[in-house]
Amino acid sequence: MTGWLTLFIVGTLFASGDNVPVRDPAEQACAADGIHLLILGTYHMDNPGLDAVNVEADDVLSPRRQAEIATLNRALAAFRPTRVAVEADRSSRTWPDRYRAWLAGDRASGRNEIEQIAMPVARAAGLESIEAIDFPMLMSGLRYDEIVFPPAPPPSAGPAAPRELSEEELLLRRLSVAGNLRRANDPARIADDHRAYMDLLLPDPDDPAIYARSDRLLNWYKRNIRMMANLARVARDGDRLFLLVGSGHLAILRDFALHSPRFCLADTLAYLPPLQGEASLPR
Image 1 (cartoon, rainbow, N blue to C red):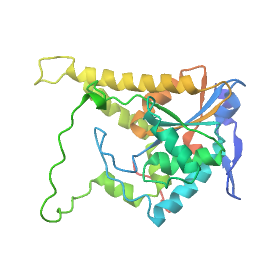
Image 2 (tube, helix red, strand yellow):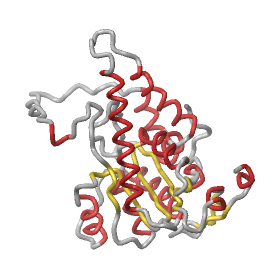
Image 3 (tube, one colour):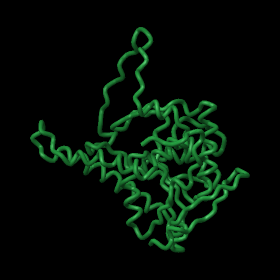
């Protein structure tokens, strides 16, 4: 495998006159019928509040963010995907139908990362549809349709006091979109984030069920395994497959792809635009 580590390819950005060198050893190592897979981990741009740890992004529809996202999408288009997959419920037609409506001009872009990144990249590649590959499941093992959520509290009489932003949220606002995604997709950061899940292997001293915490980790792996199975189901020999997912999935999905003889895992950082004003990225 070491022989191809020094090889590179040159990609040309779609919808742009700029020639940007893209180093991707997997391009040279992949068999003719292999599936080139580019996985981009992202933060949730529309703040759905469904993750174990949620950070609040600023408005991606602002002029600053829209310019940054346009640059990002031109860079990602250099991958030349033949198929685009997204973290959306495989059993639902919601996002494929939204993409078709958006292509037809019947729907405006919202703040979700699927609308901001996956759909423009798919359109640049001339794709008629996108693939939903998620198996939505909480770490408890429950699906969202198995839970009755309490009603939202009534609005307060006066304006809510501004919430103090976390260090991560302040960083999210300071960095460009490309800077945030380079940080999220850096191998060292992916490993750091994944280590936090390993704490679930320790039993909860206040719970008599000694596997209660580890079963949450089991369900997290189960969801990712099903996502990878869904991805393998939609892929075809020779595909160039772009997958957009929340960054928490990166460690497991990348590991599955690296150990699968069917997939050739692309270097995500090679397809991201350079830093835009950031001298360096914090861990």
